[in-house]
Amino acid sequence: MRHVVLYSRPGCHLCEVAREVIDRVRQAEPFTFDEVSIEGDDALELAYGIRIPVVEIDGDERFEIEVDPVELTALVRS
Image (cartoon, rainbow, N blue to C red; front, top):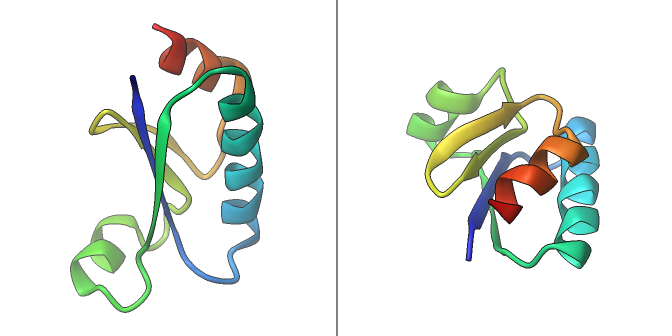
């Protein structure tokens, strides 16, 4: 089973949209999901600060700023 991680921050509208896309895809294709807030973590802020939301699948960065539902579906299905 694939593992998806969403790097986000509180109050981020694009993060909310990405989470909605992930939730919709997850209803059709099962995968594990974690959301990690970069807020207050200097290393995460440096790595992801201006690029959030960032989505990793099985440790590989796949999306930044926008999550394509068709591509996400294909990636978690394979």
